[in-house]
Image (cartoon, rainbow, N blue to C red; front, side, top):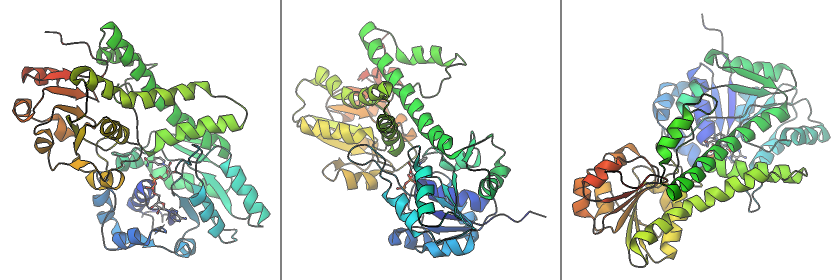
Length: 433
Ligand SMILES: NC(=O)c1ccc[n+]([C@@H]2O[C@H](COP(=O)([O-])OP(=O)(O)OC[C@H]3O[C@@H](n4cnc5c(N)ncnc54)[C@H](O)[C@@H]3O)[C@@H](O)[C@H]2O)c1
């Protein structure tokens, strides 16, 4: 006999909320999803999945009977005592985390002794303490508070929910923390149970560390270019050291996405607000911004003036297997190229719809073949599997020029060169014949 599973509420049905909801439904919970975006809820009620995430559609279809969607918070409050908050916390103009949506949820909470807010959204360290103070001031301190930061990665979010590296639960050691731990128990992941502030900090520190690793290898790549070394082989040699590990050592045109950019900036400002100047993170951010622009100088070195040149962007999403365009390096790159007067044509197998919202003036192609037609240069921006499989001999015939810049060091450079094209990666050694 299955033990009856705790029903849960999930507030916010974006990348994190929808995956969390489907994941808990797959573990046997009734899940009550709430979103203020009525159009999104209508699509979910109609059986549509509004985001692209491998395996998510299937998981939702399989457990649809246990998933309920509404625009009314009361529907979740009525059925579940644990209310997971997965609303957005985008950066403000100053780079701090915008907690407007989080505060809206807190404001809407009823006075209750039997509910808990479980914070999945990434919030600055200290947010939980502030929320608890506000609840006390409003005589709502019966409501429990748990920090349960989310570590899933877009592109493998379902897998990450079902097989997490760890589950972090920050709480005050009461029923709510125990209940959250119980929900995750079937996943048999290592558990870090700590206080709220430490849980909040774990999330920010983890993202800042990963961003630092990327900026570090990007700087090594830039030095490799000066000295004739090859960053891919350097990274391989570094990554085999078990203290370093091979992940996040892929040099390229910079990290993007909704999380790294905003979380690194939020941690830097959080430290600053508390009186500590987090110097390292300033450099991590600056290196990343410069890295996104580095391709432009590579193009100029080969082509001279870019005005009137036809540049093909292969991929736009911030990484493969997602349609998420938030913080994508392509946004900066395309804008820089357009500012230089280049004609920018782009193809992304999945993210075009999202990209059009942010870059309406770009010329969009229907396929990799189409985008490369008559191009003076091609840039691999996102390493989608289909873009790694293009036939370079065919490309050489289609293109007007011969320059291929591998912004992700993911192409077979030799195959590109054998087709008669000029290959240039990020931090790769010049052609070794
Ligand atoms: N996307 C990721 O890979 C990822 C990974 C880990 C953590 N996070 C964090 O999780 C949080 C959510 O990120 P996301 O990418 O899922 O965001 P998202 O923008 O995809 O989704 C947020 C959802 O919340 C809804 N919403 C906003 N205000 C609301 C309210 N008051 N009540 C109910 N719904 C509301 C929005 O309509 C939207 O559907 C952020 O804090 C983010 O930093 C994201």
